[in-house]
Image 1 (cartoon, helix red, strand yellow):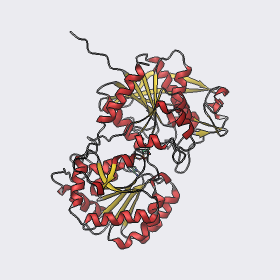
Image 2 (cartoon, protein in one colour; image 1 turned 90 degrees about the horizontal axis):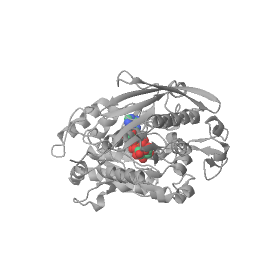
Image 3 (tube, rainbow, N blue to C red; image 1 turned 120 degrees about the vertical axis):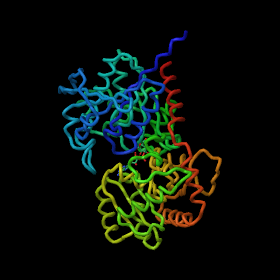
Image 4 (cartoon, protein in one colour; image 1 turned 60 degrees about the vertical axis):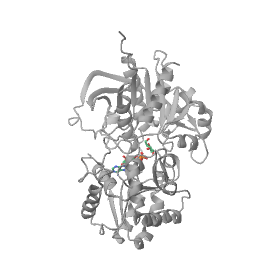
Length: 481
Ligand code: ADP
Ligand code: GLC
């Protein structure tokens, strides 16, 4: 009789995880990827216990293990909490610095001044968890907030853990003053260009890139792009140097959670064989928002108000859309300058509705109600929004870049046998080109081909299946190193 092989044990570390703490796609991935991997691995997820996390709702309880961490001459007390949610064990790191602040990273437009110390503490707590439980084989870190952990693993000779570092967004690197090195308890020997030094400052993202055994990023297009000056955010040289351990693995979406057939956050359900519910969702949404004209195409934008998402480009063309016989609904939060500009435009244009803030329910209602999703990103490592939109029968309009290029192909080369989705794509990031894409959408809206596209997209595979295969191979290769 064969004994069942023991599953590899993985600790997955992220500064955001849905449903506990989410500001963007990282949280979706940190929820859905471990869930998808848990069939093949024993996987626990670790995140900071922010003040906004509802410990009663999720039955989050303290674990016996409490400890203190000495860092840069200061002692920090840490409490570990735990819960099980949808079959996965989550560990939460509680400390005064992390947990007694209103925001995850800081108020809009700012990061907290002590973020380096806050997240270094999180990383040191991760190391403590690994030392307490010797059955872990792999540590999988995500973005700069957890980038120090691979370095700390290398420093600790008693740990035989292999590390993966995933770059979700190279634009956020965790850059701090040189003095921070001392505050986070690292030797001055790290202050050189092949380690953490970056133009006279220290760069925490570099720790992940240099010290992890393997680096992944969230699409193979972005993996290529970040090795160039245009998208490398100053780290292109370092990434080229480490390219043999850099892999692009495309994200998926949780197709159970994002499912118009059963989504509890939308009023009417629908499937590719019966789209009536989508029409009702649109009507219900128009009524709720006060937008007029169910016969007009509804364009939606869902995303952070930052340069990355191309919100500035959208703002440039908004007033010109008044003559197009369309409605536009925008949901997002972020930089205040964009909010102010949008509020001004919306006050003068009754065909545009703005929801300012972060609201999961409104986002689902928009995916269901929309005819077109606007995603004019300047760069996009992967992008989940366009995949969710396609699953809800909403045609994406995207700038041909990063993960958008890989997941949305031009409707002009539609192939019913293709495995991927289709939408309206454009290549030049200029207001007149974006406006032209909207005009194409208005034309497309009047043709029966729109439904053909939507039915194809709704049936396409945006699940995690292929990515899980790639991560599985990666973890097994690392184990054998
Ligand atoms: P990014 O991670 O760069 O923000 P993604 O497209 O990968 O972009 O993921 C964004 C995720 O956050 C999606 O699940 C999207 O629906 C959600 N989202 C973005 N902004 C909001 C908002 N204001 N309210 C609710 N959900 C939002
Ligand atoms: C980042 C990127 C986005 C990606 C998400 C999840 O926030 O901006 O493109 O989809 O992470 O990996």
